[in-house]
Length: 448
Image (tube, rainbow, N blue to C red; front, side, top):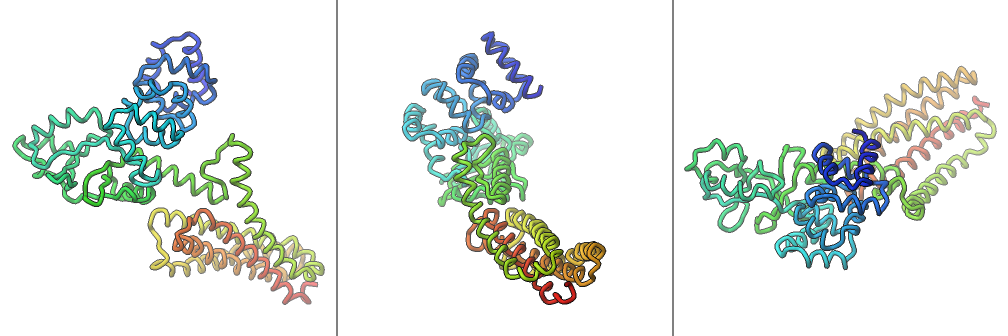
């Protein structure tokens, strides 16, 4: 069922106050699709919709809705009903929601929650949202190492319904230190008299709650983990990070890098307030304006040459444009490699020579074609040679700066995705214009 059909069906059920059909819909459709279909609903429609749902369906909708819809739904539900819904949700999802509401509402909800749940949520709220502590869940299974297989299975049956991950069981000692993990399958096939200590894997990867979420995603993807435990300095298990959380992180980081490469805030989207879009985009446009003036100043140095050879004005954007495109290719590859932890300036700076060689080869190929076309159009061999040489030079500049700029920014603890393109564009525009017009000035007698 597509989104339009789902919206129409929901409206029909709401108008008829058909709670039974709504509940059946939740059994046949994904909650995330239903949540997406609510985006255009009026508040009065949402009020009726929420009143017809069971607590379980309410919890699934709020968990899957985007942040703005979550806040709207909670506001409609009221504190009392929200607390009932929270009792069916994971603590990490609750913490994400509470992190976006006002301090007053947050305190009220925390005070109404069960003491244990409130304590866990407050712990999660104490960590930055983009760290391991901020994305972890406290719903996991941790058992003592001396438990037999029979006792372990009994505990899993008791705890399992309240946890997010049941396939991986974490093992702790008498000091509550994390010492290993066990797959549920190993427990099921082991003799009843064996203990968890007999079958546990002691080689377990962990992170601290302060670990950046991007590093977390790299660890999970590299080692193909189902769950990554988060421990404190005393090696006590605080929570686990599940695969679905890591997928969200990867999507978020990729989206953020893509938007920042264009000088757009990660929080901006279609339909954002005009004032918000202006304040987030205009500063980057001002910075780009400064770099544009640098390129313009470079061109201005050769005004006398351009006046004498008008063909230069038509040809020079080709040099700058090709340099910018080639630099963007290198930039994209390097930023991706940085994000995956595959490149470091201290040991990998020498690979800039590869980019220089690539710039020379690509510049020669594109420069030859461009030079040939200009020769045929203007019947001037020197003009073809000049753009051929300038193209090689600018693509070398593009490869050199496209490789080193993001690595240098990373070295200085700056986000390469934010500033790299500005510096790169400046380098290729200024470098391209200077090379092309400089060579034109050198060979001016042959061009006139």
